[in-house]
Length: 292
Image 1 (tube, rainbow, N blue to C red):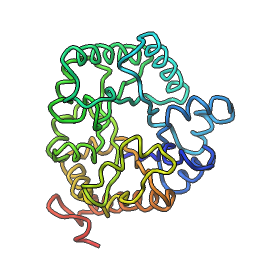
Image 2: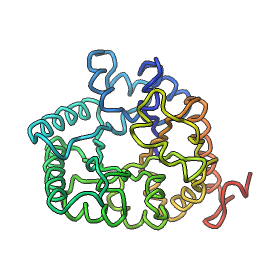
Image 3: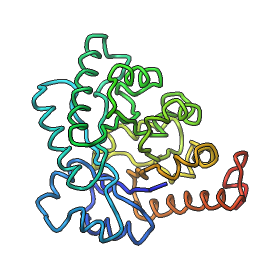
Image 4: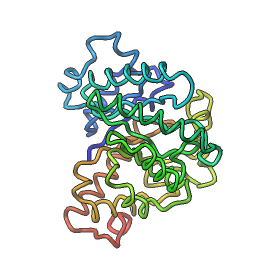
């Protein structure tokens, strides 16, 4: 698995891309997931580019943004084209977006038809740039339940449409990420990993809280210390989908305090689990806790 750190983690900190990249290199990360607003602004600093990042042994795994599925169609197409060009410049193949800004249960049939048609148009723009349009499983979007996500895939029906499998949000849907993964596996090209101390606190990941400098961070927890069993999920992937594991990109999506220490801890925990499976010290019926 190729693990990325996200520049969105440092959205409220006075830290440069150079500092993030050098830290990622020294701590075993493979890539950086670049937030769209950062990609737009970093173009004013020509020393930061794909060649500079490659010199550190890193790449951009995905550019992440929020493309509008309503409003002015020209604005949406122009914004998508701009982000596609930036994604190309960084050598990435994936542009992440959300499927709207309203929960699937609140979207009527005609509005849903308009949104999915718009998303299909945006997928065509991505395909024209040689990219994949990656929709994230996320609350208050058309990918906020398994049924609506599967319906969305059928409605858009475009080869550029792929899935960013946000594990904690699939769990938030009320679904078991282990059971859902096989249903979406052919389209999953990226995953987001984060955890929460208590299921009742999942609202801390709502965009309005995450993006607020004074937002609540209590309840955000290291990956293997939260309410969702990541040991079990990752062990499932390692044993049941070993080839996909080897090719998969995943981002450690941390929004809380002590970013560097937490990200380092989470990466080391994943690598420890992978090593245990590869050495035969753990099988599909065990968890990491049983061998350490």
